[in-house]
Image (cartoon, rainbow, N blue to C red; front, side, top):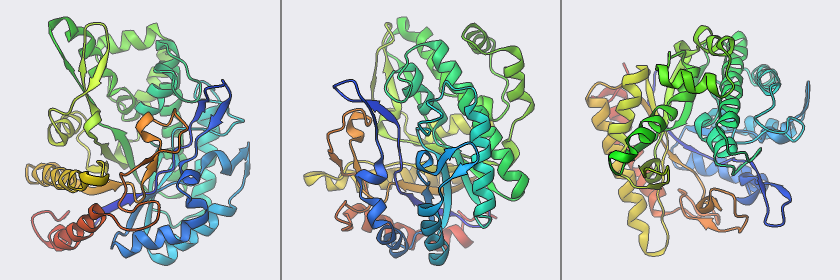
Length: 400
């Protein structure tokens, strides 16, 4: 990787939720933000901001129709335009959901099916350099199988461990499948950066467990040998010794960049009964440093945003400045930072409820509104890129 990656993303979540009447419903953010109709306009907005890297993923549940069966019609059009505009995609192959025929993350066949999909994608688009096979593996497993919100909507340690091992195995098999075709591909593993603060001594034990659990998906993905108590937890809740050794023996660390996603809601106060609430305390610098010290990989800030709503315009711009200042300090302190992302290009819909309320509520987190008019934070990000671009190429922040 020779250039610093200034990026944005087009939000493409598609989990299955349960409506109030009990019916399952697929949430598709590309549909809610009108991207299927206005995709060409959206890509032009990326280009107009001076951004040359885009976190983007085709709708997996629409493309992968069955074993060996794919519908590339929409994806072909979009990726041809990305190539024409010289925008480098970081391709997000699975974003919080799977096709209906796979059902959910409890399916043990999912890793192999997903590996086949990744191989088919890499063969069809051989010019793509950057990938995130499975977006936010920890969040995917946590919300689907521990908090009972998405997809299988289960709430148990057994379901969580099962989802985690399937998701991470899928990520590894996809990485290996792409590398077999593109040996020089780079995998930017976007993952939520979490921390749990105990409210009092009675919450210390559970906070300690949660602070190990936040690392679990990356530990397995990178072949990091977990501490004894975490191994006991895994073995007690459905992981076999053979499965654990798969992760130790098949790690893909050598081709990875560690992508850290950070929001004000990523830090949590923990109570003795296990209840939590969000409360920003340490910030991006401290928490990313914890992840870097554990894995010693190049780092990219792969997601952040804050609201820009009515009288709160300065919140988003101040948040952008704060995140960038944290990134610069990390870089100057020796952490190999390779990129930064404001996520997302457009405002989002219903993320205030973590997508489980299908209300159509617009969340003003984008560089542009859903009317495709630039927001003050979009203008601020454009100026930040202009101001710092030379420094990231030739100055103190350059990668070489």
